[in-house]
Length: 528
Image 1 (cartoon, rainbow, N blue to C red):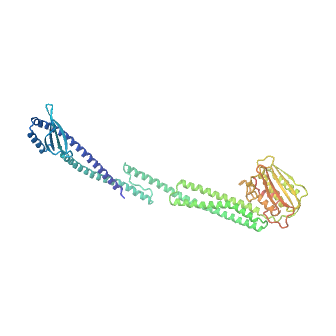
Image 2: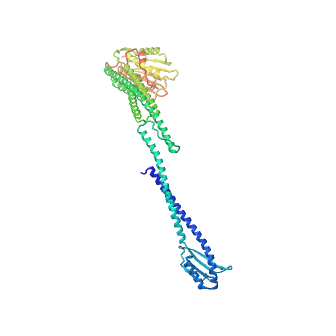
Image 3: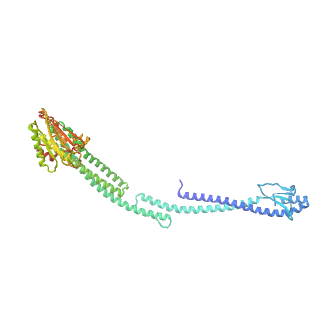
């Protein structure tokens, strides 16, 4: 792993080496080209002199003198070789060995008075050319090596200055990482490193300020967490109290032993209570996780202002959810306790069905100030039952309340017709309205405890469930619903004229008068 200083020096050596090699190659080419040009000019001058010396001998056919001159020029080193050819193309004199690689070849006509007498071919050795190039390259290499050494020394000095400033920056960063607040380093100068050092100092100052703000936020968050934990603890205690009330209410229902379907009602109530209580417990668990995560981010010093505000907002929402869930559970428990009241005061006696139903309807209409629909009782006289009139009256009030809440909403000229048909052992009572009716899935669930199509608009959805328990328990009969979407709804009560001496126990209401107590305590929620 090379340091920055070593990388700078190595880069300088590589750059200078490449530059030196390039300069040497270019210089050699320039020198060789210059020497070759000079050799060419020398060849031209030599050709002119050679023509002046050789042409007279060639004209006189003095071959001995011509041969002697040729040998003398080659031996003296002026030419590497020399060849003379007469006008007939015959070689009349030659000396030396021709080599195109070791010498530069020239060819020149031998003329005198404008008339050609032959041709001379000669070569000039390139030995001098190579010697000059080698000498020049040697001296240039020495200059380049000296320049390289000087540049490397200067680069070492520059690298040392740069790395020293960078080492100062690294030292400052290490001090900041170790936890030192507001670290400042030397930023004198106007170059880029000085600007970088100044930026580092500004960053250190800003970080120091933010760390201080973060510590303050951590303190505030800790205080808020403690406050929130206290509130969560209070809500948890409230939930425990609600659960305790639920258990007490369940015990009261078990001890009542009035109806055989008591266990189903308790299961339904518990299922309904599981929603707010489960929401409260889930929200409380999420709130604890939120607090732990926030505390961890604070300890890690990664908490931002936005993160803190998000955590506070989410914590407040969770606390509101816990409060709403506990309030909903408390409301359900209160309603459950009313449903679980005993009706041991019910008395069995003979009564006329038409008189009972007409009186119950008249009393309910008198007390109800909001309904704007009509009730028509069409029950023949002389249908005598030996049963529990108060319980049956309560069922009728339940059905009237249910119709008032659901059957005629948004309907003009609403009408509920109550009719009855009796046999030797039982009577069938039908309550038929001209409302909008119910869908199949709603009609299939109307008797479920806590089922309502108007969730959050009043009433826990227990009315028809209680009516079913009364009809199937104390009254010894059964209840059903016939409904078609857009064609109204019909509730059918099939009751024995004289139920068994010990009928199955069912969930019933209190012994308050039907037209007042059942309207205030229970709000049937079945039809849409």
